[in-house]
Image (cartoon, rainbow, N blue to C red):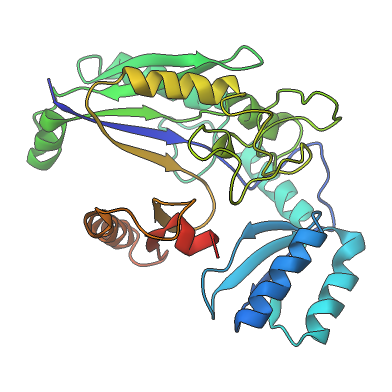
Length: 324
């Protein structure tokens, strides 16, 4: 039995289709040249919460990706031109792109093998987990993290140490137990396929508000609802009525506490090529930051080597990426 545990969860925040219409919505890439532009844009987005920021700028020369509703496009572009801020159109019509992706998916032939180059429904993901356990019962075992607000099971897979084919993989699994949870926000992810493809939050109601859901990423107890969070239930960054108010988050935390000798926790998201390390709430990095940065650099080098350099990644603390 391996004596080191690694827990991996995926908080899928996908970008693709549904009944909520995004016809005419446009996504812009805005270049940030200096501090004046950085703080102007920050203020602009704070005072216009309808602007949907997909990616924030990290430094001068970096860019912001933001989706703007049809009625706001003229004001947005005129404002940037007036400030002489450089921008270009990244997606001309988000709704049209979502429709194209939907049509491509519907036209796709049934796959014999699981396709890792596309997004899958929750049913397909769970089917793949079951298939893994069925085909590799000595190497994969499934486990349940908990049950969502709407009653769906949050399921994961544990990789066992009975591999014995590839020496590097065998050595890894002989020394590390890997727990993998493909989707934690199962209700929200299902909702992206049935109603709003850009949905991000959970699906639990908020007392006194017509807006549904909490951002599960901001519902954890550690420095709950501080920097980068919102107390407004209609915000995509809403932190919830209290820490662990969302059963999906509290169940994951409880399960994590049950894993002995847990050494690493990785949370994967679906937008932005960033490998972010602690801290988010504090500017100074942790004492072992050099070690974390070394692991990060080796990880992104392997990722970029694997995709031939077509996608680039960056390392840094969460604070250095989004905390300015």
